[in-house]
Amino acid sequence: MTTRLEWCIVAIVLLLRHGHSTANAAGILAGWTDGVGLTDTGRGQAERLAARLATLPVVRAVTSPLQRCRETVEAALPTLTATADDRLGECHYGAWTGRHLVEAAKDPLWRTIQDDPALATFPASEQFRAESLGEMAQRVVGGVRALDAEVEAEHGRGAVWVAVSHGDPIKAVVAEAVGAGVAGLQRVRVDPGTVTAVHVTARRMVLLASNTAEGDLASLVALPVHHDAGDSTVGGAAD
Image 1: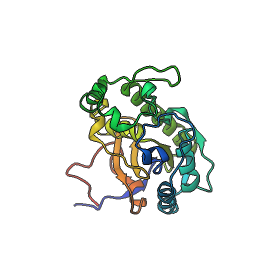
Image 2 (image 1 turned 135 degrees about the horizontal axis):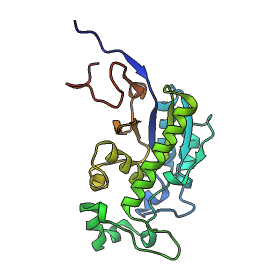
Image 3 (image 1 turned 60 degrees about the vertical axis):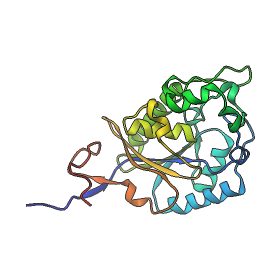
Image 4 (image 1 turned 180 degrees about the horizontal axis):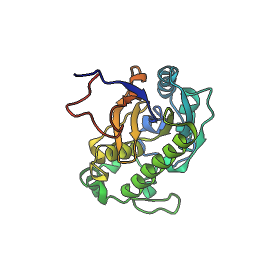
């Protein structure tokens, strides 16, 4: 006899990309530049995030320390005090920091970033730290795993928490969740003001939704109870 699949609430991380920033508007690779905040468009996106998150029992918010992320989480979760964590920060772009994207696209490194990101390392700078995309991905994915473990240990399997970060770091988490790794980084799109949902399990990360700009989030924190939450239902979802 076939029974209807039952569902329960389990720990989920909602990855928020910061709202549209002044650097986005200028077409500049901001990196870790100080003083990059939200535009009016970005503030509107953060307010829409607040409406989407309002019905969820978010137990913790962790943010990149950069201004545009802090402004986003303050508007999106006004009743929750977020903690800053460098592991969720933007990629360290080194000498590319502050560079106009139209100019960067003419650099030979651009093609490596697009076609073979696992080999891409940003050039050093006296002012800004540089890292490779692989180092960035390892930092962010490891950070999300560690933070998720902390949340589950403190709040249990019913926990929902929020991580506010940047485009490339969130792309790295999505690429990890779908098994593409750093090599698949540019197969992912993450726009300003969007929500990506990931379930972190002992075996793997599971992508529940990516780059969502609207819609109810409650369904994203429901997973089946008749098998390990890290496993996929054979034949596809049953509800």
